[in-house]
Image: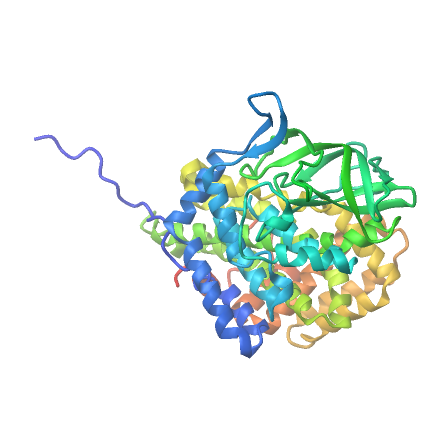
Length: 544
């Protein structure tokens, strides 16, 4: 009788059918910390419901399908009419509809809205990161629109709706709407002041005709877009609808979709305007100040998105190593692998804690909190997004060859991991933005120092890092060449202060020793062996 030739043993079960929110202690504690008591139970309930959806087999399968069947551009219909539409797999629409119904575009109109949305966005990224783009743009368009009260009154209810309507029809006939954005051009990239798209005033007050192009246009099937163009008075912000109120299609010529490294489910397009109708937002010549509120909000979403990717990568790595056996025991119990997992978990928790603190500052809205955001958002965007890629690669390595196989889901995380560092201004742009705030806005630095000062005396390594940071900032002569070093330290000190105040002692101790005290190597898995690493790993284990 032939023996058994294929019995599967020593493989981790799939990480599925679990509450992604309840299984993330750093996230749940941050929400409990920052949400007011009168909305806490409601917030926890809705987040737990979304967490179960994110962890479900159904939503995970939608994420796979949306990436296996990427969007397809249709410039013309069968009769030769120009239509400029993008076709998506049904899974994309299911995901986007679920994200809208979960309130991912509705932070501005409810108590604790930014913390609740931030936690939800961080989780939803773990299901599928691509549909985060239209959700983020729609959410972030609100502060820019509020520079024009009439436009805000017209559009805000549509943007903050929980109804997803995919049809291209007049926005006044839709129960909800999505926004995209077009800022960069071929010749300028991040230097938007080099934009050449022209805006010609029309007879109707506030109406213009646009002629030009956009090198990157996010979410081209959205209902409207905020774009920058050069009006007679200078660079100006405009609202460009896809469909005009009379039902005709606006001139919105999609030239091609970008073939990207990751983010495959999401359409990013090159578009041209040729007599395109637009409505001015804000004053002529004030385009950058008008749209900067949108940019700041999307930068925070880059931090949240990276934190979500990092959390999912760590959850998968810890889950695998909890079940996988090698060399006579569980991988997670091996001292060297435990060191790697703990190091990854520290990075993930620091990112989550910082991201939710910034969301809470948006909810507070006070003068000092706004000043803190001026430095903390670009610093966090710089540092957290840069840590995402090496973490994702290391986490995939924890699964060995399994992590290099597409079915594991890890390659999708690795491909996605560099994205948020590039979008909404790459690393150098963020570093220079922090320098501008340090030079021009003393209140921003004061707010930052007040924030980190709340942990003064709790850890000698943190105190020393703050002292060194002040020395570094005392001389801003020729600082541009060392701006990345400075911004990195700003982010690390802020993360350290938050963990010292809020995280368990073993987490704060390990972070301060390795990130602030210098007791670690250049790679993950080089933490001091004397730390309580087992507790750090156990805290990161995805068990709800």
